[in-house]
Length: 403
Image (cartoon, rainbow, N blue to C red; front, side, top):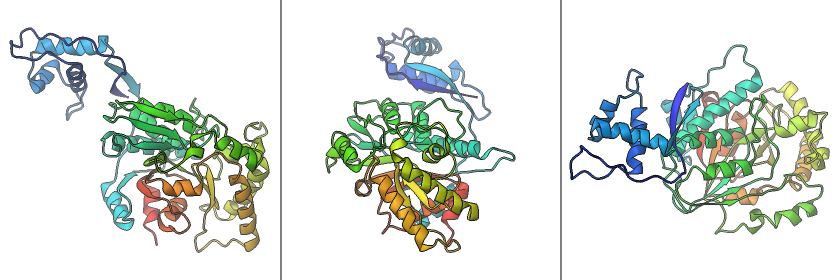
């Protein structure tokens, strides 16, 4: 288990006087208290906590003053201690560099080592991969190199986004203000694949959660509607009332954090199609989802590494097959027809809106994702989306280097 320190959002108390530090010493500020506390819980090269004496030496203060400052930080709730699972997230810089050299449009790449565990349930493995990817992406964002004041940040649904935001919650707030954070998709009632999380992984939840990760003001733009509608006209009536209906060059996101989905077991719509306990909010699209799932399952029974349907922010697309997979024209036509009917009933960003997002931060890995990510990065005529940051696992990354 790891101990993490996180500043709270409460107002700080009065500066701590510093008797014994000499008349020229400035009072201890709330920021000083936070810094000293974080140093106190920092591990040295042998995995031991820093002593109060060590911290005093590093900050140039009296030991008694440092001790009182740390106690005051907890008393004033400037910091809190949380226990989190120790993770085994290991980045692979050499592989990251190879991906950046291969895909020059990427500004940043994070590759996390993935070692399959013997006997691990496939759904649990997929969840574990996304948890590791989220933690790694959160680490990158926490460095403060991605977001700036007045940025407009869009968020999708799913595990990669959830775990990225979770990682950021455990960090110091980003010193960024006057940001706008908006949901990019209606509620699909997403869950993790193994059913272990007691969270709904929807964009509105992610948006509200991310707002607390900034030290400055954040304006929220929520969708506050389910994703599915019975008719295209019913969708348009609601969409124009959301911020997606007001989309223009002044409101569209400068950045968007999202994952990708493959229509395989574990995907929310695949689970819905195969469930006997139907969700009433998803029932309007059942006539399109169920035959799509049948087609995907049939193709995957013959070609397990290929799924013909993917989604980006719950906007569904056909995935071009690799050379060794043949799909007849009739099946392609059926998929195209079903995707058209499905997409015109979903409250989410349009392909045109996706193409206008300045910088997409993509967190994607696990089963059946390598071909999807490869399509997004290579086939710009079909997918004209500006993926600028990629976080993936080592197995997917290696596949991206295959020609």
